[in-house]
Length: 301
Image 1 (tube, rainbow, N blue to C red):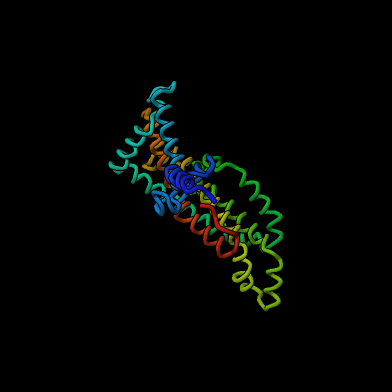
Image 2 (cartoon, helix red, strand yellow):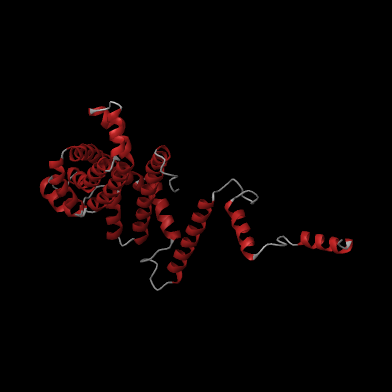
C-alpha cells in the first residue's frame, strides 16, 4: 500500500505541472490542437487546422516580404513591401480604376470562355463518337494544345486588328483545346462495364449517353473545364497587355510605363485574388460535390 503522504505529494505535483506524464511531442501536439481550434483549445470551433496553417504561412510570408523590402539589396521602388502594395491596392479600389478594369476583363473572360465551352463540348463529343475524327482532328487538337496561347496574338491582330474580337479570339484559342480533350478523354475512359450493363437493361442511343456515359465521364470533363478556365484567364492577361483599354492587363502595362512597381504588384495581387475566388467559389465546391456523389473520396480543401 502506498504511503498517504507520498500519494498526496504526487497528486499535488501532478496538479502543478500541466503535462505530468507527457513527452515533448505530446506537448507540441497538444499546443497545435489548441492553436487549430480543436476541442479544448482556446479558439475551438472558430478555425479549422487547415485555416490555421494557411494563416501562419501567409503571415510569415508577408513579414519576410516586408523585411526583404526594407533591408534587402534592392531599392524600395523596385521591390515595394506589402504595406506599399496594400496602399496602392486600396487606392486603386477606392478610385474605382481597379474595379472597372476587373469588370472589363471578367466580361471578356465570360464571353471567350462561354464560346470555348460550347464549341469544346460539341467537338469533344464528336471526337469521342467518331473514330475517324479522333485519328485526324484529335491529333491536331493535341498538337495545338501545346502551342502557347500568346502565339495566337499576332494572328489575331492581323485578322481582327487591335480590338475586342482579337482578345476574345485569343481567349477562345487558349481554352478551347483543353475542354475538347477533357470531354474526349472522359468519354473514352468510361468503364465498359457501365455501358454493357446499361445496354443489358435496355438503354441505347441518346439515353445511353445522357444517363450513363456523360455522368461517368463528368469527373474528367470537369478537370478539362477547370484547366480550360485557367488557360483562358492567362490568355486574357497576355492579350490585354497590348490593348489600350481599361482592363487588368492594361493596368499592368500602365504601371510599368509609370515605373510604379507597387501598382504593378497591386494589380497582380488582384489577378491572383480573382483566380482564387473563382476556384474556391465555383470549381472547388463542384469538385467536392462530384467527388462525394461519384464516391471518389473527399476533395482537398
